[in-house]
Length: 259
Image (spheres, rainbow, N blue to C red):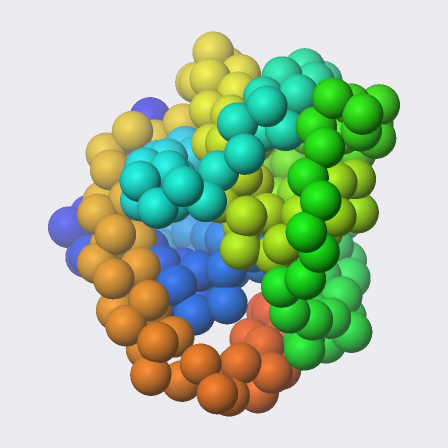
């Protein structure tokens, strides 16, 4: 475990709140900021610990959001379980591979992923909820395949993977976007927990920092959700701003990982 100062824990809470606000405003994609914030804001100089700790924080925040969506009946459990069960095995494989990769090289690949995510957010910035039929059993093959790939990437980079899971669920089942968001949280929670447990077995999770980050994320999530309701008519613009933020963070991370 790292020895951090009180100011670093305070910065961890701020970093968590930034991720929470981003998730509340735009949903999937916001949690990808967790690792760079832990490294460049909090000052964690070991990328693997940043990845393992952020995976735990993302899983916890996703689990809390899952409870809220489940109460609103926005979760299609049969689809979620097929997707998540296969994806958890993928997350274990991905996180095991990630631990074997050099930290700076892993950061470089992470930065490239951020740029890809940013581009996808711009491309799909105005996509709304559509579709009526949701058949989990008939689409079990697609759900399993996409779930497995999403799990591997999620585990490898220590991210929630919501930006992969949500469109993956829509492609596989044609479920409305709102249901896809709620259903995706089952997988995001499972992927994050699997990655965090795998990293913790190697001593690569800072538990106090994760708790502080989770607390900040909950506060930020409430604020982000409130802002999202007020700014719902500017959804496309919000996604553009968030995509630009992720792209700039990716460029910054790429520059420092190559230095």
